[in-house]
Length: 87
Image (cartoon, rainbow, N blue to C red; front, top):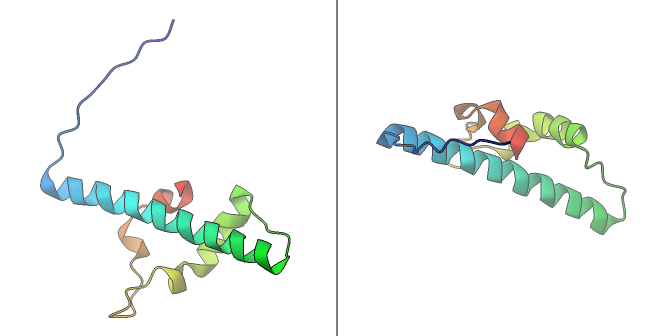
C-alpha cells in the first residue's frame, strides 16, 4: 500500500525567486544540451547524449554558455549544480 502526503508550499518572495531561478537554470541547461545534440545530428556526427557525456560537456562549456551578456560575468554559480544536472 502506498501513502502520500500533500504539503502546500508557502515560500517567501525571496524563496519564490530562488525556486524560479533554479527551475530556469534547469531549463536553460536542458535547452543548451538539446541544441548541442541537434547540431551534432545535423552535421552527421554521432552525438554523445548520455547523462554523463552531457554533464561533462556542460561542465566544460558553462563558463561560456551561462554568461551575463552585459557584464560578461558567469551567472551559473547563483544556482545549485543539481539544477543544471537535472536539466
